[in-house]
Length: 148
Image 1 (cartoon, rainbow, N blue to C red):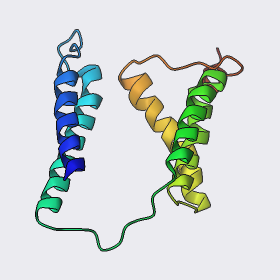
Image 2: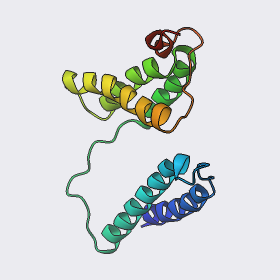
Image 3: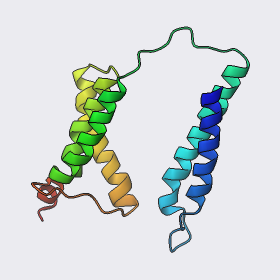
Image 4: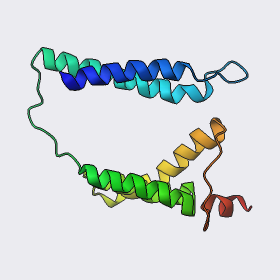
């Protein structure tokens, strides 16, 4: 019940903070759409967790949880690698590693993550939302692909 309460309070605060992000010059949702969606999702998870804890609904088996240290190491490595070799290459490495930590072992799934995650995130953030990509200090796959 404590986890549910913390999720609900945190998500409501995040929703209000997300609404403080300025709209696009054209009046559209723009950059605030992702924080709003994430905050709303956390609120939904918190409400579901509260409902489950109040009515005694407990999962029959607890799924294996990934090592928090593995995830922390991946996050730190991802941020460092992004600065060194750019967004596309670092995401192509981090996405399948994250799936590996969560127990996904099929080569086809890991390969799909390595290709689809960078491509999808690039399309959403850099093309549709106009966010500037992170370029690498050493080499950048995006510069090579764009012929810059």
